[in-house]
Amino acid sequence: MKKTKLIAAMGIAVTSFFYSCSTERELENETSQKLEQSLSAKGSEVCEIFDNATESSMIGGVKSVNFDNGISTNCDNNILIFPTLQAYGDAIIKLDQLIDDHNDAFDQQTINMTDEQADDYADTTGFDENEPLTKFEDELKFCSLRKEIETQEAQWLAQQTDGAWNISASPDDHFIDDETERALLSLGSEFIVGDCRTGYTLYKRYDWGYVSFPLNDPSQVSQALAALNNLPNPGQATQSQVAAALDPYKGSTGYSLNTTNPPASQASTCRGSVKDKGEHIFSSDRRIRWKHKLKDAHFPNLSGTSLMKTYTKSYRKKKGKWKTFRATIFTGYYGEISQPIQCTNLGPALLQGKERRRIKVKERSKMLIDVSVKQNEFFSVHKQEGNSYQNEVY
Image 1 (cartoon, rainbow, N blue to C red):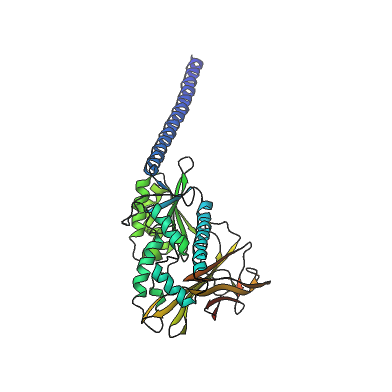
Image 2: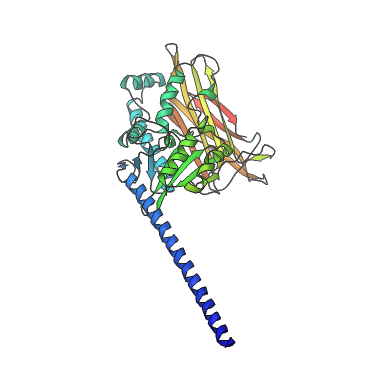
C-alpha cells in the first residue's frame, strides 16, 4: 500500500515537473513571439516613415527623409539615408569629384585672367564654387549642416575688420571640418544607414566619436535626439554629458557610445592624433585661414589607417571689406613620419598637396598604416598667390 502511494506521488511529481517545464517553454515561446511581433511592428513603422523618401539622381542609393530630431528647419527633409557606411564615404569622394569638374570647367573660361580678374568675374557671373553640393541638397529638399554653416559664416565674415580674427568664434570652426561631408549631415551632425531588409541605424557625430541608435523604436530615438540637441552647445557636448542626457533612454533605444578620437597624450614623444587651425596675414589685403588634422581613421573607415587632412581658405580685402578670394592657393604637408608607440622613424613623406584656383582647397590622404609625428619633423603647407606659410603638425 505504501509502495502504491509512493509510486502515485512520484507520478504526480514527474507530471508536475513536465507540466512546469512545458508551461515555461510555452511562456518563453509566447514572450519571444510577442517580442518579434513588437520589433516587426516597429520595423514596419520605420519603413512606413521612410517609404516616401526622396532619392538622389546624383548619388545612387542616397535618400532624404524628415525624422524629428528636435531641430526645426524650413526644408521638407532634415536627414539623409545611405545604404551602407561605405556608401557614406563614397558619396564624399563622388561629390568632391563633381566639385573639381565644375571648377575646372570654369577655370578654362578664366585661364588668361589674373586671380583678381577671375575672382571679379566669378562675382559678376554669380559663379558658385559649391554648386554640385547645392544641387545635391536642393534635389533632396534637404537642410544640411553645410548650408547652415555657410549662411552663418557669411554673416560672421561681414563683421570682420583688419588685424587678427577670432576664428574660434567663426561658424566654420566646426568639428566636421570638411564642407563636402557637411553636405551629408543634418543640422545635428546625423545620418542614417540601412534599408528595410537589414534594418536602419542612426549615427550622431561628435568630435570624440559618435552615438549609434538602432531604429527599432523611432519615437524613443526622436526623444533621445531632442534631448541631445537641446543640450547647451550641443555640438561641443562631451561624452559624459551625452551619456547623462541619454541615461533615461538606455533601455528603450539600445544606443551605443563609441570613442574614435580620444585626446592625444601630450606626454608622448610622438602623437597620432593632432589637429590645429589658424590664420596667416600676408599683407594688408591678403590673408588665409588654415587647418590640419592627423588622426586614426576610425569612422567611417576601419581602424589601422591614418588620415591626414589639410585645408587652405583664401581671403582678400575689396572695397574696404574682407571677402573670400578665388585665388591660386595650395594646401599640403611634408616631413618625417613615425611608428606609433615606439616612435621610430618610418621615413620621409615628400611634399604632397593640391594647388588650384579656388576659394578653398583641401588635401585628404589615407595612409594604409597607423602613423605618428614627432616634434619639429612634420608640417602642413599653405600658399596664396605664391606666398607660403607652414605650421608644425604636433
